[in-house]
Amino acid sequence: MVEEAREEETKFTDQVWDWRNTFADKLLGFFPRRTAEHLVNAQKEGLLAVRSLLDRGIEMLENDLKRVHERPRR
Image (tube, rainbow, N blue to C red; front, side, top):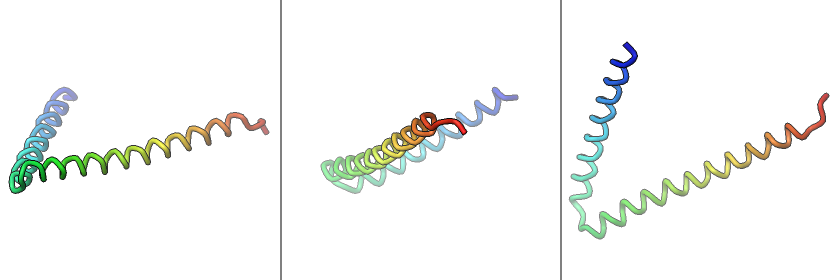
């Protein structure tokens, strides 16, 4: 039962990625190659910026946790 659910999930995920790739290819096909490259790179940079913010947030939480552990017990 669990294996069947995983197979269905994998099939669905593959279908979604195929749809996404087809859509992206068609959309980017409207633009000259260099423009399409710039659009993809801009999206990548946006995601990297979000990743950087998330990494900083995680770092701050880890520092908070260290301070909690360093506090004297009550």
